[in-house]
Length: 621
Image (cartoon, rainbow, N blue to C red; front, side, top):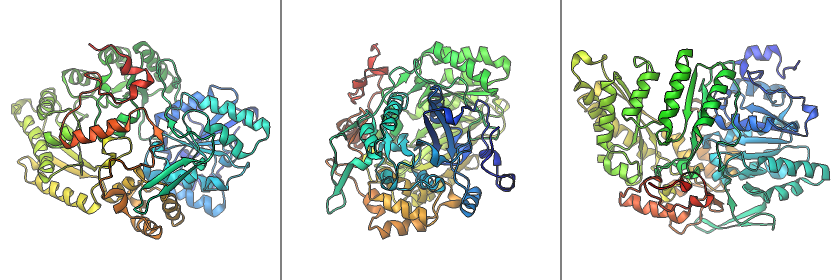
């Protein structure tokens, strides 16, 4: 029987002690002494968020299929336990064995969001692992980062021994085999990193050097040893129907962000929205086979006891066998009381027909993501959605019995004018008007429109990576401008307006396109008390401002300028398949508000065809 790392007294004194005891349904149990490699998978945020992340579930299942590897998990302790662990010098531990993280061979940290960067340092610090890779010895695990933020790893490069660029199903096992050979050889820490650097998709930041021009832009970025490649090419899983996926995913004992089984129906997107990093990083779109998905869904529901399953995809409507899959799921699961969740759907007649079958219309709301209020701005961002399509979708939904709609927009998009922002309020009102066109006796109460805006953050590997970002002062001005416009609409009482915090978005923007000089800023902010920066109640903006100033860096440099077309970016050494020339061409098309067709309508020559899979190999009709 496992001995818990925390005493009963401590567990009873902290919020949600189930975060720290493990033992969840489908948790893998192995004898840590009978494996060759111990791998601790880490999500640097609170348990409830980390347990909802599909990527960790996939890798956890994949690693544990090998008898010689035991993959365990760790999440960021909440602030109450963080304080106790520091006061009582309790080392951070993995959930499965309850043993110290420092005793593992690897700690794999998933990088989903820039505002978790100080939590990475929290994990290392509480584990007793030196924060900077240069200070680690053979007594310390190797720290490896992966996920979307790994595509610009430079702001946190000092803290990692290596980064995995791409999808984890491909070469992780090759690295584990190299590690076993190195361990038997008795080589140095650097010896293993040299071997790892030669594995496709692995980036070892300690083997590279950056230099800067007087104006602060990147002058040169080069490898220091022959084993380190000039370019790191992302790893792509080309066959998603013959790979790893958990048939018995972990099920927590407490409420988490997403309490349901997750079925990833495809990876990637054909749409080419110019603001969307994921849409570029995960090209080309690769669907899973229908029979494979049916089998997975059946096994997951049987092994978890969940009463809900969600279809995961960047754009579910683009899965070509979606009608067959959904109607099969309705037949297979409806009698068992299992709900089917369908995010990322375009609102059309098929979607409404499906949702009327799988949702209780008195309890659900429909979600539209126009992203911009005016047609001009939707063309700028290549959204491919007209006002006519939006209003027709809303009308059909209202006719079908819905009376609640959520709308998502962005403020601060490149080239945005006040009249474009005003159109967000106007469009919200037009949707409300569609509801009141329905005869009164056929309505289901009053209409509710929730309009939410987030602050646009330019990301690497998107056409807007050259674009400036609004200052937080300008973002606030736009927010209040829009609020006034919403209040002036005919149906203002039916529209609720929400907006994302501008201070947090500013820092996210700095980290998203930052360089190695930010490592020192993050380290200083952490040492002065910054963790859980994504949580507004713990965000300490003043500390971040001071840390930037102390290191001679400015927000204006990272956010306030349009970057030169020939500027060298800190992430240019990574090859995602999509070429920089394509992204620049799309940036020019955005300025002309010209729409680029989706991948199935016409190939735009983005470069991802080199991977020879997915939509790039489909026959054109």
